Length: 264
Image (cartoon, rainbow, N blue to C red):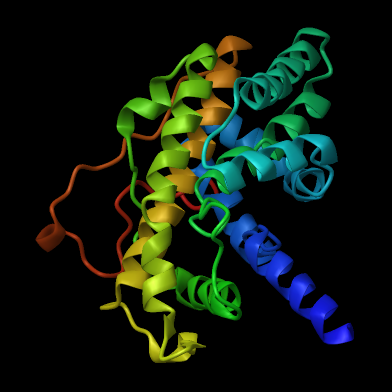
């Protein structure tokens, strides 16, 4: 009986989104998304970075559960989208009430939405992954983050209005789901999870990790800027990404300008 219960438990864990971006990856997402924001917004968010990272852990449990259920099903329901949009509305109300610092922290905490929707692990659907695959994937991404060229996935996303965010989030989820099978195929071979240390930048896993991270950075900045725009925040001095072709980009040079922390 004990073995049966253990098997059921393991199957349940394998099918559920028990993992998410690691803390170092969330910190990096927070930092890189600021680089796409208007100068003033990026600086205000940076000044509150510790509070924002703490806010990420306070994301409403009921909403987290609703998102998790939808990710398992493969699409966001109207009720979940409405609840996510309401989080942005609450941020705007805080700004209108002159509770600026609190509003900025809550705004930064909305990173959880695009981060989860951009993660091909969480968006894999009910099938999930074989044991060990998720751990190896996150260890690979974290260990190779410095090698990932962060690019702007969709320039138009930075010009969205807040009312356009729900449809945009649905698109982010769809693009992430399309990459989930690559992780399953490449990181589980011969009946076991592949050691992340045996994978390099030539692997399709690196391609998925690179695209997913850039998608999360872009979607986070798009979410922040759309809400900031509706709150009539300062939108001047927004960095302009450079358009490049692969042969023009040195391995150690980012595809968009240095962050606000680095250029002053």
